Image (cartoon, rainbow, N blue to C red; front, side):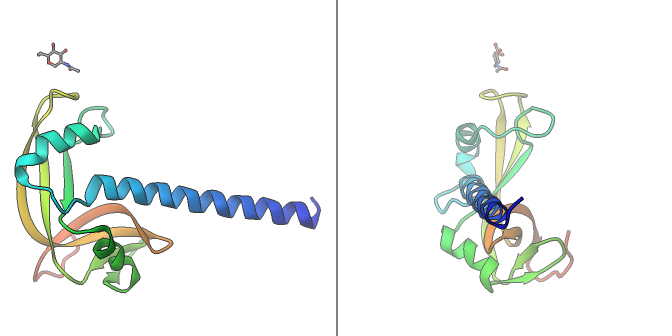
Length: 145
Ligand SMILES: *[C@@H]1O[C@H](CO)[C@@H](O)[C@H](O)[C@H]1NC(C)=O
């Protein structure tokens, strides 16, 4: 491979990785960030998102952060404490709505129950963008899980 070819290849690889991260970020926002979310909207929102778990059934549990995208993005750029594996725990608490499946196997027959809590959220960051919701911790505890 000539130097020029190698350079072009690297450039292409870089662009691909960046596009991929942007896509993951957008998916994360759609799935986990909603300032208008309420516990009453669990069934309808989960139906719109159409998320499935590894078993092919409706996703068992999904957490929505009641915030705007900038507030969540800030966790990756100084608003959080780094943990293992690219994970960052928010320094500030967020109100979250947790939707848990209560019945049904596949869309649109799944039913969900919502609950609300205030938590420090743990997210994965890639290129300073949140790309994955890993979990949350109750305020006042330092325990990860
Ligand atoms: C949803 O439930 C109805 C009524 O029980 C059933 O006929 C239908 O096949 C179900 N749909 C899916 C996608 O499971």
